[in-house]
Length: 447
Image 1 (cartoon, rainbow, N blue to C red):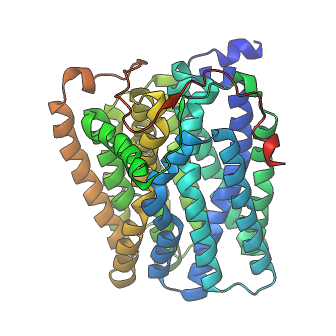
Image 2 (cartoon, helix red, strand yellow):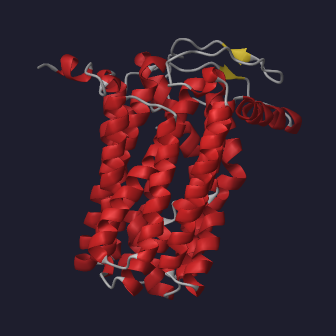
């Protein structure tokens, strides 16, 4: 079977696009390193302070800027060439990881170093996340964007399996600095992939003239928020994501103390708990890629996540917790991938960056709230109790979401189909027609 017939198969249609294949491969390598740094960073903070609450503070440093700046990141995503923007954000991330490596390898790292670098990454994430989400449709078009979202989730979770497992073993054998070094080097893969993309095959969305006054900035932000508010299925999706992200997806805060203080399995055991979650997420993402997307997967996933976390909080057994983390990972990615697909298919192209910035702000920006809350609960009541509470809230949100979903008009709550909705009028800015490539290679413009 040749490559064309393979990539045209159901579930792999996005891979028929050369630019997406490059992006997919580069991101896969880079995300393995990113997950290694996530594990190493949490373990490093726990070693330096011994207090789970500090993991919550680390989350504030990492994602607080997204909560504050995420919507403005959507303006950047809509107003600048996405490929060039991603080239800059990925380079910044590489520099941060290399700095962590140097500090850890020379044994000069201090807690404030980690928090400052995490804050820099948070500012970077506020631009990178909505831009990366909106870039998918430029690589594959609207007809394959749902499949690209599912494959992105699968790729993310392959890395989520490999990264924590490798990190746990690497930390045990070589120390945390080795994980940071691998992450820094891994960014070369995605930078190279974007550099060799074919510019003419990208499908840039219409970009508006960048606002020149504070009034225009906030008017443009309001257009994205207004579209979310008026579109019932998108509003439901963003709301469920907000509750699950805040209360149910605090793995990097709660699993380290669970592994160290209650299960007594060390860094390697922590890595495999995270890898089990990644394996569940991977299989769920593949099920979405090959089985299609229905909005009900989001609500079912929230139920599975909630129930699994309640049992993790009750059962302090490593083998059973591995299975429960598998289920929790499957539930979590069902929520996130389905919500992402709903938004990608509903939103008009010229609003994509701003609407996706609402999704990413709610998804990542609520992490500081959950991080502080559940870090404090874990420090005072214990990690198992904190995990169970988060699961209970996620389950309650899912049940309320089911009632909300059933009250939506049939046209808004049916199975997702590839349809293009007319865009609402853009009041503050003039939309530029950029149906074709601009001629200049944005990646080379950065040389």
